[in-house]
Image 1 (cartoon, rainbow, N blue to C red):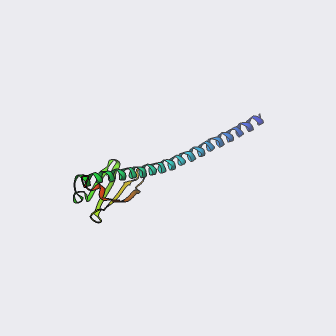
Image 2 (tube, rainbow, N blue to C red):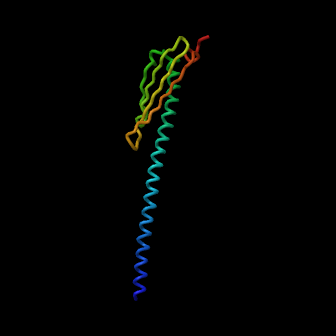
Image 3 (cartoon, rainbow, N blue to C red):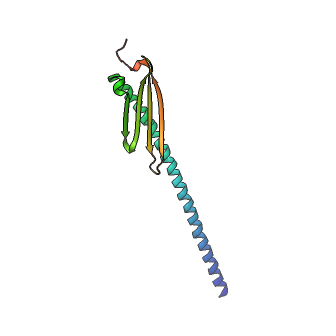
Length: 132
């Protein structure tokens, strides 16, 4: 009888050890998953900022072609998910224009702001399509 009680006690210790081990493994994977999702959302936001900046460059080139530099000089854009962009055009000389694009978004999982800044020099070929 005493041998069976001792075995049941060891089974109980093994069961507790197994439950604790499974809990530790699950905690590790949950923490790893959270860290991975945080970095993945960072990557997504940065890629999205880059894509919006490229689109804004094209939009401002079209704006310059259709209108003039003074009309397109300073603009603000707000896209989905609170992506904020500011653009500035500066005439360097009669043929070249400096385009500055800055954008930001608040990270969805924290209060950190992700930012992007791009600077382009636009040449005379974009100013007037019918220039000789």
